[in-house]
Amino acid sequence: MGGTSTGPRLPGLERFNTAPAEVAENALLACCDSLRWARRLAAHRPYPDLASLLAAADEAAYDLTPDELHQALAAESAHQPGTDSRAAATALRAAHAAYESRFGHVFVICLDDVAPEETLDQVLAGIRSRLNNDPEDERVQAAEELRGVARGRISRLLHGLGGSPMAYDWPAEGIGPGPESPESVDSGRPDSPYVQV
Image (cartoon, rainbow, N blue to C red; front, side, top):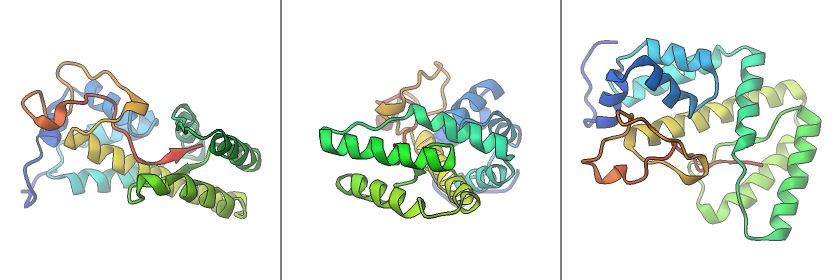
């Protein structure tokens, strides 16, 4: 993918473009657990800018088979959010159980634009609303939410912003901006302000 970028220089993208294929694939698997998706994105490097990479990520995600989508959704179950409130934790567990019983996979919602104090309300409202979907409509909605989560994780990965709920040990030649960057203090797996319950 040639061409020039008019956007700001992004050291994380440069490192992603030049990293060994296995390192790039592992970084991408931290964003969406689909091996074919990760391999496809890694194979099409270099990307001229973040927007091109995100567009390619969306395109690759649209091509996931139902089994691959189910696998990627299943991997999200490892990312359980915490809450200080016993009542909230109980409500989240009950909502999750109802959702998973109905649809056979975990609930995923992208909350990149939601303030942290509104997260719980948004998640519970999302589950209640989506429980009314028929299974095919919900599969489409879950896939869209997963794409949003992956996009946010890729963006944070390339900007060097990790997250504690999904700690990931990058190799020394990892993808982030590098030790010279103040953004690279947290070398964790790229998180997303989404909640899977």
